[in-house]
Image 1 (tube, rainbow, N blue to C red):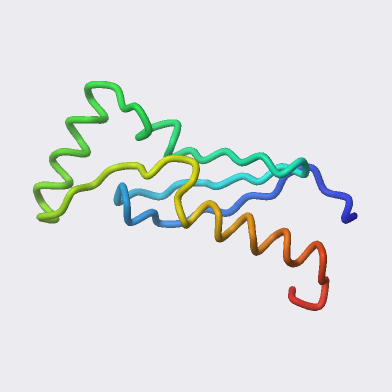
Image 2: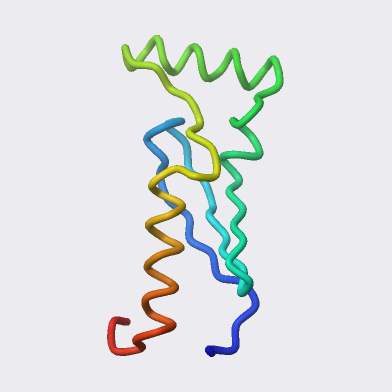
Length: 87
């Protein structure tokens, strides 16, 4: 097993139209700053999200910790760990 504690990447999440950081921990757990901010947004954040949705003429909403962006990044890391040649 590769000796790492946490790895992270920052992406532009099109689900919320904002940059988010996805963190994957060695035990396989994940954290996303977008989920923290947009998963159950405060009033101000919800208002901002509605305004962005209106400007883009599409619904913007966090898809939760099971979204494809998170699972794709986690799967990529796990694949690299099992096969270092994929890096």
